[in-house]
Amino acid sequence: MKKILFTLYKNRSHSLYKEFIDNPPEGYQYFTLDDFFDYFIFDKPANLFLDIKRKIERDKKIIEAAKKNGIDIIYCSDGLFFLNSPIPWVMDLEHVTGLISNCYKLWKIGKLIMPIILSQKNLKYIIPWTKTGANVLEDNFKINDSVRKKIKPINLCLKKIYDYGYIEKKKIKGVKFSIIFVTSVNYNGEDEFYAKGGAIIAEVFKKINTKVDIRLILRSKIPKEFDYLKKDPSVEVYEETLNDDEFQNLFLGADLFFYPGYQSPGMAFLDAMNYNLPIVSTRVFANPEMVRDGWNGFLVDFPISSIAFYLTEEFNIKGVPSGIRAREDKLSEKMIDDFAEKIIQLQKNREVLEEMGVNSKKLLLNSFSLAKRNRALEDIFNEIINTNKKI
Image 1: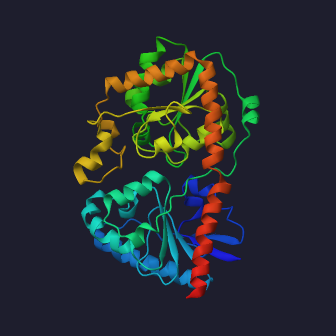
Image 2: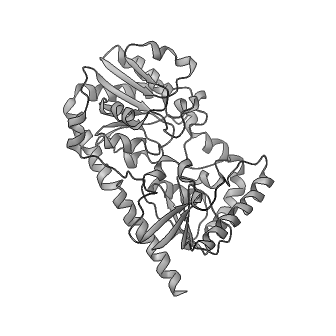
């Protein structure tokens, strides 16, 4: 049994890792840092010098623990990287800013040193979560052919995908056309409401609520300026964390998943697909990989003037949209109208709505299953192990 160490703590990890961390490919055993450390080794120092110092100390601890416990491969999560590890390692990431811990002021330095870091001999594979993430990596860094060969995008996954018919039988049918919006299950602050497109939803709701009979389900913290949503009889607000059954019931009672976010979500689209829902969202970053416009949902463009693209404008980070400043955005009337048109179209055409729901489940099964992800990871791990034997 070969051993893989993930550089994360299981109970503190993002929900996307929890989908596969307990289900390794055949012949492999997964470990996390809490298997070897009874304390938290990550922190946020006050300055760059301390950050570098702590990183060196942290890397040393992880590598020592890996050596001591016979780890074969270290799996660095979400852009974390090593400097000169003697143990073969791989790295996954959502997009390039993860390599600088989303500290954008370090981007100029990062652009210079990252090609060197990615060229390290024992970094065997770079695993973006999406094909878009892989393309954006190449768009931003000057990388050579040897690094390019290391880049292998592997999709996120769901460990439990429900049968289409099972979900249809369990659905909670309502009189009104029901639209659901959820923010992250990992963090539910007010800033998430804006970053995930909550302000856009509020404007679209105003536009369509007078034209069609709808029910809007919001699983999100609601900022004070949008308190009026809580008083509207057509809106259901759930601000607190929900247990699994409560979360499932919200999706079972919905007809459409609406996510006009400023960036691609982690797991939200996959959850929506799992409940046979069409998705209406924005055409940013990797969203077109999960929402095929006109097939399992609709995509609407941000105007070029949107604050979604400020990382390109201010830091010359190519291809990475951001919702950090979404609260400041001046919403486009055309964008609001486009969203309203797509939603009304689906509300009026049940046949198209249901067909898109079927297609959502097909896409989930074909591209985002645990089995598919594990096959891809197994290929990578096997190659690393076999190559290492020959050395």
